[in-house]
Length: 390
Image (cartoon, rainbow, N blue to C red):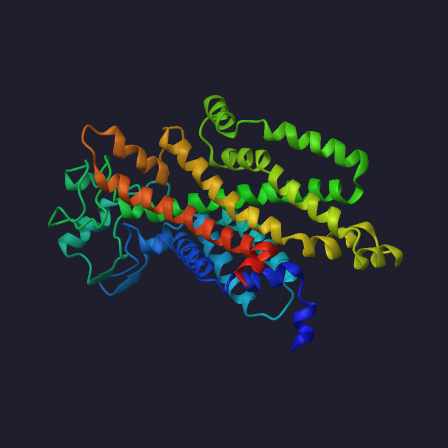
C-alpha cells in the first residue's frame, strides 16, 4: 500500500488531503450543484414542455428549442462522467475531454439550429384550451426570457404572491421568473470563472515556468512584464472595452484572463526555482531528456499545488468582476446574470428584497465556496500550519 502512495505526485497528495476537510467538501458540494444546474438548465427551467401528447402523438418541444450551447454542455458533461470511471491517467482523461469539447462545440454550432422565434404563449394557450392529452413540464415552467406577456402583468411580483402563477423567487421588473433566470445565469458565472482563470493559468504557468527554470535574463524580463500587468486596473480596462466594443461575454473572459495571470506566474516561478535543483530533475537532465519533458512531465506536476490554490481564488475574483460589471449596468443586455438582477433591486422606487436576497446570496455562496476550497488547499500545502495543527 505504501508504494502507490509514493508514486503519487505532490499535487495529487495535496488534493487527496484537501478533500478530507469538511470545508472543502461543502465548497465542492455547492460548486457541484451549480455545475449540475448549469448543465441541465433547459430541463429545470423552461416554458417549453419536456414531453406532451397531442391526439396520441408524442413530441418534445424542448428538444426542438435546445441551442448549440445546451447540447454542447450535455455532451461534455456525460463524456466527463464516462471518463471518470475509465481507469486511465488523469492527463489522458483531460486531453480526451478537451478534444471531445472542441469537436462537440464545432459540430453543434454547425448542425444545431433551433427556431429563431420563440413563442412561449403557444403551448400555454393550447394547454389551457385542453388541446393536449397530457403534458410534462419543467420544475420551473418559465424560460429566462419569458416575460409573461400573455398574463397581462409584466412587472415585479413577490415570491408566491399570485394564486394563478406560483413564482418561487418572484419576478423581475420585466415579469420574468427570477429562479429561472438565476438557474440560467449560473452558466455565465461558472463560464467566466473557469475560462478566465484557465487563460490566466495557462499564461502564468508558461511564463512563470520559463522564468524559474532558466533564471538570469529571462527571470529579469519576466518580472518586469509581471510588474507591468500588475499595474493595470482590470475593472477600468473592462469598462473601457465595454464602452468601445460593446458588451461581449467572451471579451470579458479574455480581458480578465490576460490581466490576472501574474499571480500564477509568481507561484510557478518560485516552485520551478526550488524544484530545478532537486535530484530527480538533475537526473532527468543528465539522462538527456528533452526540455519539454523536463518542464512538463517532471517539474510541473510537482509544482502545481500552489497554482491550484491561486486558481480557486482566481475563479472567485472573475465571478465578482463580472457581477460588478453587470451591477453597474455594463454587463450583458438580455442574457441573465446575477449582477444584473442585483442591479434591479436598487433601480426601482421601492426596495424589492427578493431581487437582492436571492442573486446576492448566490454570488456570496459561490465566492465563499471557492474560498473554502482555496483555504483548504492552502492549509494542506503550508508546512507551518501542519506543524501548529499537530
